[in-house]
Length: 212
Image (cartoon, rainbow, N blue to C red; front, side, top):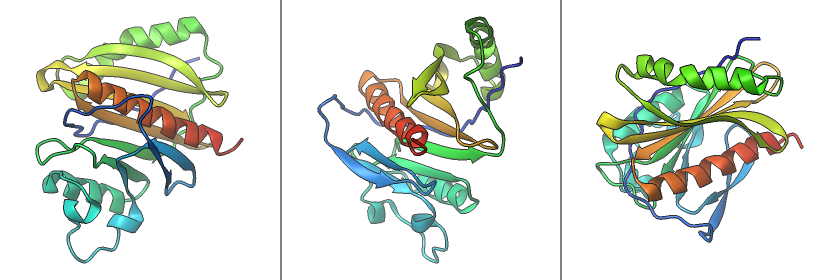
């Protein structure tokens, strides 16, 4: 059995954030059809917000202090379909726009049948594969198959040292023919990482729990 994974590389940058287990949450409904309880301060950018806009969508309209250039890029990707973004309105700045992307890929992945040895082999080669993707060395900090609502999810995290960037990616079976990629990233900062982990785990739970 050959372990397959989808990589998604986008510009992910973030300002320092502060999060704790006691942070308030807010309800959101993804354009992919599932509900989620996220830590407060995440703003959905989906087709309703981006597609069909005749005027340029600005950070101010979304309640963000963020880069207009980044927002323009995200809007263009949303308009192309099968992707949405969650933008952090709490502490994003014009220099750093913290975000999580959800992208649906037309490829099936099921990690429940892989052995621990197969997972270890994949994780061993992950650093070299990601370095080729980024075109520079990366350092893998975590790689495992985790359970979310009894669904097997491939999760890995890494840093791009020259950019001081942290990336966290979840690869989640969405249905028999499609896979959902969750990619979050930010500045290499403990508070940023903690907040990102909380949000992505909540999104993963929403995705895997929609069929329960």
